[in-house]
Image 1 (tube, rainbow, N blue to C red):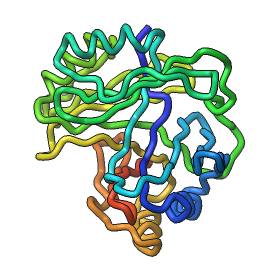
Image 2: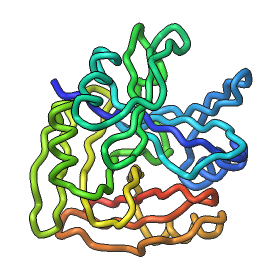
Image 3: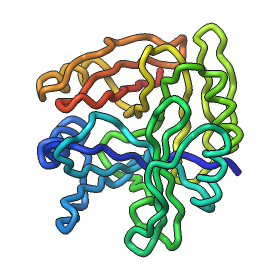
Image 4: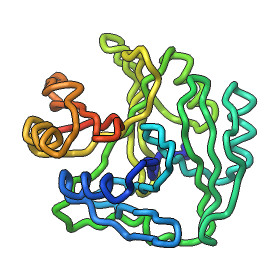
Length: 242
């Protein structure tokens, strides 16, 4: 079974403002952990959860977490194939081990190994909140990146040559699928939230202080997408299925 993306994080200069932005935009609800000033968004409607935390010199970025059976074994595979560990394994909350790495493109990602049942990974089915349903890695060389992730995490991909896009299948519980492409000059990771009206949510993001990066764009007969930057500069995607 392949290792899959099950969570993501954003570091932020103002965790209260950032969590409020996404609550107003998407209806996300949180558990607040005051001892770390950490806001954990509960996964809804088949999507994944996320976390916000304060950092004075926060860099705008989204950090996806990949769930693995053994964090150290995954780090060993990563380093053998050109990635590098950026934070060693440590226990978190008595229910998981986490670590961080950079892939060969310089994109930051996390690893998580579950030690016990974690209620925050369970998707709450009945909610009006909008779920995060897709991740994406924009890389320098899509073919090389597919090779890296396939060898390290056993990701299964296809190739849409006309878009130079590689969809990544999801095979894990409480996980989402994604994609790898080289259609951006700067490597980064992002996630997509499932909405019913792309333009409505782009307009709402702007009203709340965000910036439109890509207007409504049809994707064949599958659906539409759009992209915006939140007030701190994190790149987020929107998706609507036809």
